[in-house]
Image (cartoon, rainbow, N blue to C red; front, top):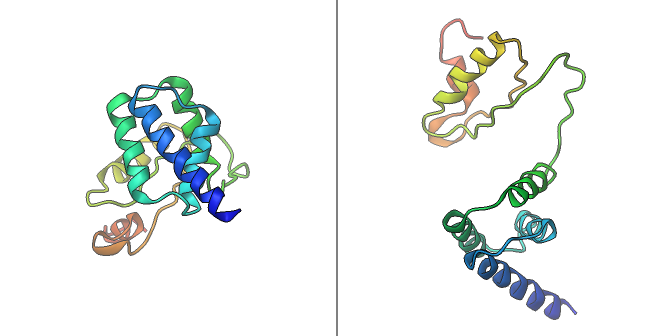
Length: 141
């Protein structure tokens, strides 16, 4: 049973790579299969990379983009910020080498009246996280 399930999954992943490569449209279920399989460790990096390359070359239509966005949103824990009044926006950042956008954009957006409940990291390798960088600025904390 496990062997046939793995064979099916391998075939399905390859078919989705080929479908996108050949300009086919992926359904919400197919996109969910890819994202959920990858986050569970059932789809290897090289197969996800092949699919991403096909997406980069062929693009995605609006329904595929909407499905991918929704599937990724619910692929992890969804935070509820309903206790914070007003409109809330997010500028996601992994920290990165530069991390210049978050440090400038968040205060500008907040000055415009929107709340930015940013989640940021610490000690993210050699670059540090957004909080590490903010704490290095005198008077910012």
